[in-house]
Image 1: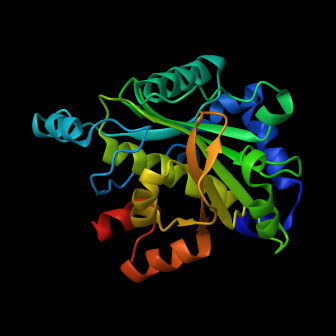
Image 2: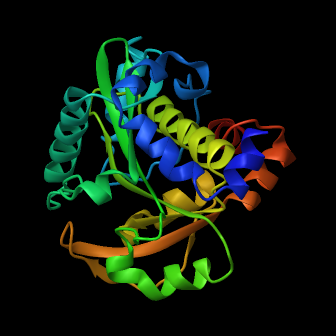
Length: 258
């Protein structure tokens, strides 16, 4: 029933976003659907700009330092500051420019920020931007590509501001963030397509882990002052791959592929 409402009702996205940004939303992370324990996953040895060195992650795991990760929605201003700090730290370490949250209230009202927690430590973050008719951040560089998707009557979501702590178990952190985004985007909001702007060097990681495909040439992302390619994920195809291996979540799919 939730999926039907999400797919058919134009008011569902703004209503949910408004709820998430209201004081009452402080209670939402305790709900099972909005606090997600990941299945864990196995990735290749790419090193995206928002992730720590894989060797460091493996060393931590070898010492028994890997801990359970739970992903939740950032609600309070403090939680958003934690997300900002993670993004600033990881992007600056890679030499990328700052990627601040939308300063304008209209932009913030169409975004949901996810946080991954290991015990009391925030170890990862990702922001989901929903297409509410006012455009997405990636429209600044890829408006033609986005309009071609919209023209087919599809519902688009963008992923931005990835960051994973250097002390995190990257595999379970990334899996948890993507799994919660799947619950929110697909199951609750009926998203059909996900787009993400990445450095050309990291296309292989997104292609192998989740099935993203490039839909643009290499351009400059002004927000981080770096070369970028726009990737697209058809969520129905992702679900087809999940069914083929009996996976219930994207994290389980990457584990099976690994």
